[in-house]
Amino acid sequence: MPAEQDEGKLSRRAFLSKSLRWLSVGVLGGGAGLAATRSLRGDTVWQIDPDICVQCGNCSKECVLTPSAVKCVHAYEVCGYCDLCSAYLRPAAPARDTAAENRLCPVRAIKRTYIENPYYEYTIDESLCIACGKCVKACAAFGNGSLFLQVRHDRCLNCNQCSIARNCPSGAFKRVPAHTPYLLKGKWREVQEESG
Image 1 (cartoon, one colour):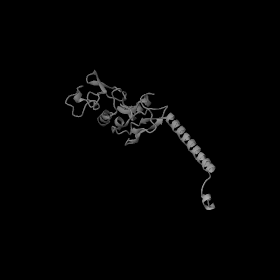
Image 2 (tube, rainbow, N blue to C red):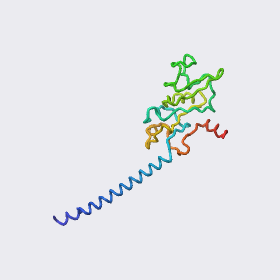
Image 3 (cartoon, rainbow, N blue to C red):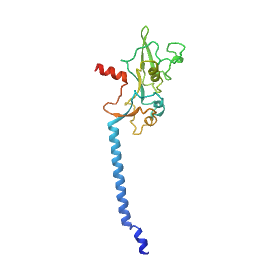
């Protein structure tokens, strides 16, 4: 073989040595990246900031779990125990009763219990809630905003790349410190700060 061609070629030993060096760099870099990702996931969890959530309905459709790990939460300290609850009743409902055609929630996750005339208590059955956000949107628009969506960490898988977060139009779905995993809504946060 002419000398000119030998200069551009690596010997077998040089090729193996160079390949092993690049392989070890790749393995070490990948291991460091994996360790950093695990550390990040261990210190933070996914949560919804209720003050910027727009109740788009993506939480019910995008979660890898069925039903979603996101649930409606009720801040009882803020609730007015209304007779006419916009989160419970459909707009222009024919009657103010518990009939299916009058309810806003598609899965009957909101329960209404009579307290005294004209007051009712509304509770969320989280096992039924699908996180559609219809009740939250209605409560924010026509009520006092005592309902909001939150990720329930006893259900959430804490996916590294959450599909809900990727599709959240308002950026409300974000990572928060694991030692304070729940974000309270503005009015409820104020009530909690005053009482605590």
